[in-house]
Image 1 (cartoon, rainbow, N blue to C red):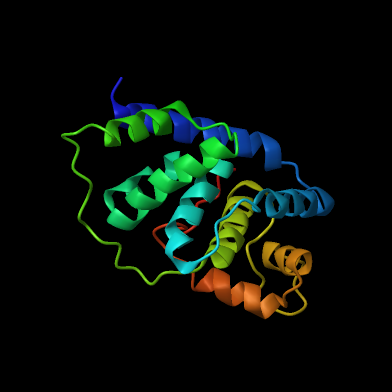
Image 2 (cartoon, rainbow, N blue to C red; image 1 turned 120 degrees about the vertical axis):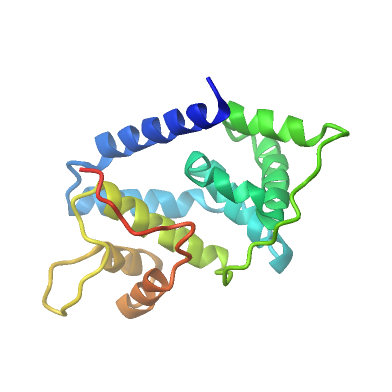
Length: 190
């Protein structure tokens, strides 16, 4: 089996896991999931130079690297994942074996890191975690990402805003201006 086939299988397993978890979520279950996700994101390094490291660490924490493996062709994500791997090892996180294999391959003397730069407007880690939460919940749960009208039922943006203490419009704006490489248009999984 090739590396690409392995990663595609991992992506399918992850989709199945989320579908089984979220398909029957009610409002309270979704709120609990958002709260738990928010609590998991506390192991970050501070400082602007660690933004890509922290985003890669969030991929490891949420087991979402298979979906984003293509980003390792960019210098910033490549270096970020190497540092995130070290941080995850130090925090005793469970790291997928394909990431361990990738990291070991980067240590080879003949290995050449990518030179390609990531030219998308960079969003901070805070916005990244919010968008990850909205993207995942809207793809796998029966709730919509945001609401268009004031009187519409609560959306995931509403729940996230309540959980982290922001207003709905701020969260909605973050979602609408997300990095489309990391969080593409949502194709509902159910």
